[in-house]
Image 1 (tube, rainbow over the protein chains, first blue to last red):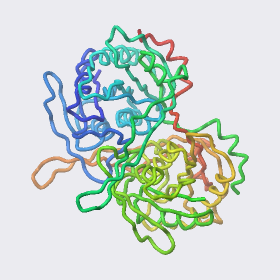
Image 2: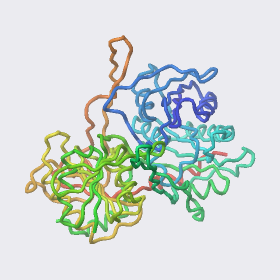
Image 3: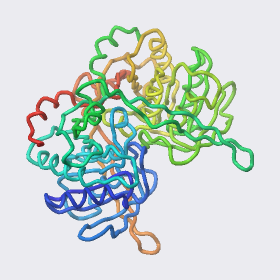
Image 4: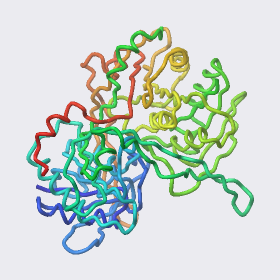
Length: 253
Length: 253
């Protein structure tokens, strides 16, 4: 079994290295990550310019490459053959900070897993609920192994993947694993207007970090808040199936 | 009613102008589009650098601005107040080329509508099934009016939007409107290795344009293939709800 490890925090992120080392338990590991941080970059795929790939040293015993593109580019290039070894499975992360609720639409970490799914590979995205640059990924790496062991032994339908979030706790304080659904993120975006030295305005999309509704049992946000590893099965079909019937009563014609 | 019109093909795209002019039937129109083409850029939101906005002349009677960011940035900046007028609704497009099936995960046009939904605004994404630079958007603009009229008169639940694709036909040859679900895209990505004048390799993610399974009635791909306007209700919840029970039988612990 050969596992591709990618991420969106960039090739030098400690979470990527922690995941790569952990995955060696299951077979050969290849790391292909973006040269630069691609957080909140969504499922971007680079079709309008060519891409470069470079061998990178990220520490002992890990074959690693960086790509001057997005997480999806890393996955697509590798699976399509830039490295002449077949890829059986793609894991992404461990992301610096959780990817919960509507975060999935923004997350580059999850986008790498989406791309893997589109390229017909099993895929799991991992995130640690700690946005600090000094986060400790050891418990998350241990949890990742426990999830991947099951993913290898079980089937996932086409066009589906797992989105895994790990609470920021020592491994022995994690309460267990919960299969969850996406919860409701509460974003607190605020526009911050500033003026450059020439007096021209520029704008930051800022505001406080998002929170989420922690009261609804069974959601990813609830599980993380309560000390569980959250495992959400995710699909690429975004159809709001429950609305189809009512929309047929609208009068478009 | 004030309608924000954005897109991912860039501020100068003819489909954007066609949609903006058509929307004047419903109230005040403001156009805020990306400076540059953002196709296949996914739901990218720019949090690591500030953004600029500039007034742009895209023709008579349309107030228009460009932003040096993504479609989601255009929507977020505007709704968060860079233009000091409240926005009631966001329409995105008309995209040059269809956004069908799994395209939704890549599409910047749909990402603008996702962002509007997250910012609690009604949102509709429009695409024309013609990738040509010389496409005629008049029928699609007419169809867009017929959809928006209904969206104004009916309710959509939070965190849902409509993804509308219009076949490349004169208006009187369009067969009608179909409420659809996402179909199955067939991507044909191929990696194209080339060498620069210094002999160093670079790579295009290329291959033939995606096709799709036209045989499954009720999908967006089927509807467009058969000459209907496809209206897919889309939700931000990507949970594969049907997998939750079977995943609970896996042995993560």
